[in-house]
Figure 1 (cartoon, rainbow, N blue to C red):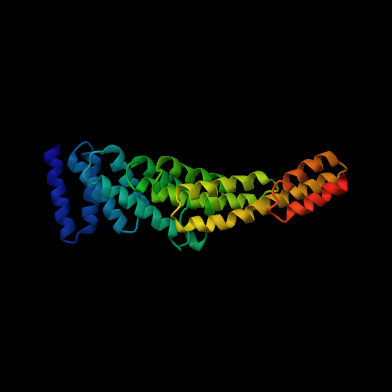
Figure 2 (figure 1 turned 135 degrees about the vertical axis):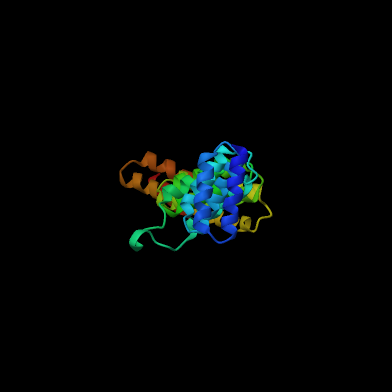
Amino acid sequence: QESRAAAELAQARAEENSGKIRQARDAYKSISRNYSRTEAGGQAKFDYGRMLEASGKQRDAFDEYQSLITNFRNTPNFSEAVKRQFDIAEALRTTDKKGFLGVGAAIQPSKLIEMFEKISVSAPFTEYAPKSLLNVGHVRTEVGETAEAIQAYQSVVDKFPDTEYASDAQYRIFKLRGVKAEKSNSPVEDRAQVEAGLDFVNRNPEDLRADEIKSNLQRIEERSMEKLYNTGLFYEKSDKPDSARVYFREVVKNPSTPWAAKAQQRLNALD
């Protein structure tokens, strides 16, 4: 089978070189299906994916490359196939094209996430693994899945520490923690953002973004104290002075914010 597959592969390449694109593409497809256990069959599968990609059928090409990677782990085209998969998924992520009849996105976010996750699993020791997981976070961020995006970015930090990808992921976690904190009345989310910011600064002290985060920490602290102060007011107005005192005292412990003086005034009034 190997000799027959090699002979047919040579014929298909001759057809491609002579401009018989459709015939060559069909031949590559046939070889990859009929001689799936041969090296020539693996090469034909890659060439078939390449020609699908050239004809604008990116998603079909992605699936063909995935089949190659899954069934021919030792193929000499492994790295190139992974790169092409990433380029296809990235192009779909960043395209301005619309879907059918100009409505919706060119591809569903769930499908895009699936593509990037396949790359990260297929090639865990290449640069495309962390880059793909970062893109999973980007897609989830764009569709408003904040918690899931944070989880995706955290996987980059955990699996690829001390890399530029981990630094980027940590920074984005800090930003997303801020999004959650802005929407919450609980200071717990503020503390989570502070922890994310300190984690970034400690791991990346020379990064220019570290200064930006440091300058934001005071604002975050003030936001957190404002929430505690407002909670204290709520309990005070609800005729629960003991509960109100708990929150006001917590605010007073942080005199660097303007809310500390206001909390002390409320404590004095309650006493």
